[in-house]
Length: 134
Length: 102
Image 1 (tube, chains in turn purple, red):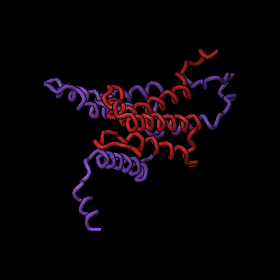
Image 2 (image 1 turned 135 degrees about the vertical axis):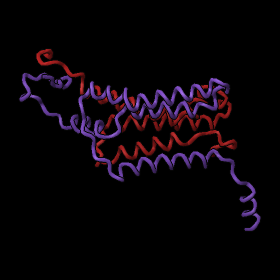
Image 3 (image 1 turned 60 degrees about the vertical axis):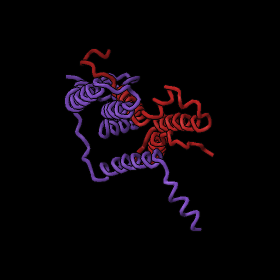
């Protein structure tokens, strides 16, 4: 039988486990939501796509993209779930609501369009037309 | 006034960290104070990256600045993910077999 030992707290038996509600709430929030390694993996994928234009282009560029994608798929579907299962045990996932999915998606889309808007050259002809008409 | 005529500065990381900082302040989510501080530090870092480039355009040629600017969103996701993982690992240390914790 295995049991989890809470760091910094010595317990003689399971009945004596001091309950730190803040710690439990924090661990539950992280385990029930987006687990850290998935975010880090997504970050690696985003980083490789963002830094792509800075790399010298060549035949190896497409190969690197393929390798990154294969590693992403493998890690997302196999390595990370297995690691979490082994390290923390099985966790009952929180039911995903439309709000849980919609807000991060809206934020990502908003960030994408905002960065496009800021990076795109301004339509100076339109501005000049407006200035002239006023 | 910020000067960015070539639209090189990427504002998305700043916006992401601002969003994280605001969501971290919501009392309903009960985000610990350390995590709120971490989000504020991220916001501060990317704000510095943005402002330094606006005030000193010469820095835009530096490789470090270009990586931080272009890869800001990816680096932010990696930082948040690793922070959450390290937090979780410290909250729930490696399971030990019965009798090993004496």
